Amino acid sequence: MIECQQSLRLGAYLDGQMSPQERSNMQEHLALCAACVSELERLERLSDLLRSMPRAELDRAALARLHRWADRLPQRGALRLAETLAAVAAAVLVACCVGLAEQASLSAAQGPSPLWEAQAISQTAADQAGSSEEQLAMWLADDLSGKARP
Image (cartoon, rainbow, N blue to C red; front, side, top):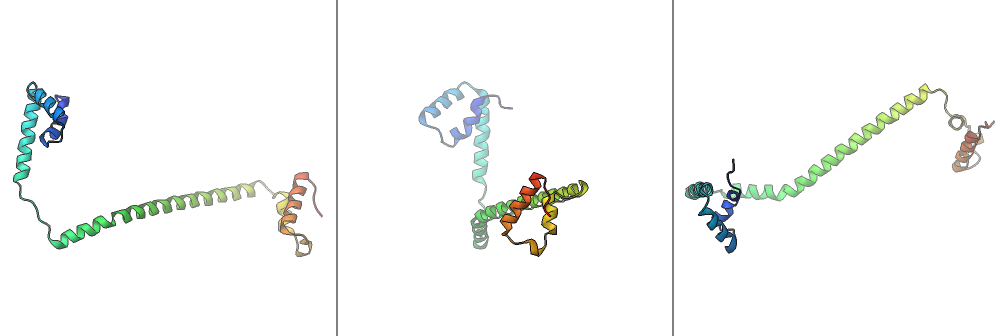
């Protein structure tokens, strides 16, 4: 548990990352706070221990592998984004298919199709004199007016 809020800044003090004014304020605080002095001593021992440890050396092959891996990181991010977007697209496609299947089953349960659908299905080649837009407009007009075309 943190006994003093100033102890959070002891690492910056120890590493020399404070302005002269901040450093002076911290030294004044250390003269009054035993908890921070104790924590600073612990951090100094830890720093000394880390400095005394031998540094691990990477051979050229390991260093080259590390560089290649780091160079591919942006590509991996783009690949993850593409995979995520593909998964979202697949989920949307599945949801649409399920929705269409439900709509088809509801339409079948509701009985006969609207007039314009029935006429569109039964329309013979001989009756197709006008363009498809005109035919569609006529079917819609007939369906909306409630009239049946012969």
